[in-house]
Amino acid sequence: MYYWNPANLAVVACPGAEAFAEQVTVHLKTHYRRIFEKAAVDMSKRYAQPVEEITRRINFISEIVTPSTNLYHENLKPHTPKFKVPVRFSMFANGEFKCEILNSIRGKDVFIFQDMENHCPLKINDGTETWNFSVNDHLIALYVTIDAAVQAAAEHITVVLPTYPYSRQHKRKGREGLTASRIGYILEMLGVNRIITLDIHSRELVNGFHKVKFENLHASHQIIKALFNLLVTPAELDNFVIVSPDTGAVDRNKFYATALKKPLALLYKERDYSHISKNAGDNNIAVMKLLGDVHGKNVFMADDMLGTGGTMLKAMKFLKDEGAGKVIAAISLPLFSGDAIKFFDDAYKQGYFYRIIGTNAVTHGELLKREWYVNVNISKLFAQVILRLHQKLSLSSLLDNREVIIKSVAAKEHAAGSERQGFLFGAHTRPAPEAPLE
Image (cartoon, rainbow, N blue to C red):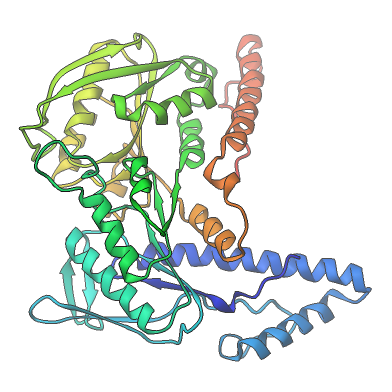
């Protein structure tokens, strides 16, 4: 059955997450219209009635179930619901937050969005003030929003955290806390049923939860599409190697190497953990070695997170010293903390790298203006996951998208093969067409 009643799905955005939540909501509405139209066509054939009549009847039923969400619509068009729930956030003089959910969410499946790394000035107190939120500010704002949803009798609460807070504090090396797991405990105690995040820093974090269901997404499909747009000629497609920037990223880069059918190399690094990096011009790497060959080849590196960026810059410079051609990095969570953008501007001018592919899981302003930065939109992926969770459908094809990537690679190789023949016989010199990716 294709039709579904969206009355019980609600999206709530914390301060700083409004833009991403709005993008996801647009995709949810698009999916709903497609499901609606598919249902109308199928039932029209099944019951031998015009599509317009089926559409009118579905809208009639929807208005009975949820009259407040479907007023003043045309009867012969799908009534698209307003998934996003209005919320008022207030901040008191002593720094305390207050959340008020302005529409009823009683008995609903609520998805609460929070962008932990949005450090742009945000409007609060009905837009009368602006404030630069820290990670801790965002965390407390999330807590009070969850509590407001619980008090408003939400039936099921899912927290959407593209960037999971404190994820780098996931293992103990001495007298220090396991803060990443403790964040999960707090969310669980507040009443959260599920967490959706992107490319968690350590997959072992999942083992720290008792009842919370944890969905760890990855943007490999979208990143590979962006990579194909950067490597367009047959020579560039044939002559590149995947490099893991450290041992912790081996599995991630092995995935890309297997999917793209390219060799895998490894940068081995020893760190001095007594030294804490403050900016991109500083890092705690004591030793760096390369296991593999990058001489004369284009390099692709994938990592989950980029903070100050000092480690990545040193790796890029090291690879260029080893004779690498174009150096392209893909970062799922491009934080670019502190003055990292300035250091990468300087490194780009010196030719240390060609492009950095990042996602919109983190909100940025100045970074999007850089020639060397390629922004990938992952809001559609999150919308698909939310839709399937709400419909109680499987997420397997979204969590493990190797088959889709393999088909995309095959299509690109076919296009490159045709282009290669053109180069050999002088038929044309335009770049290979983009692979047909969803």
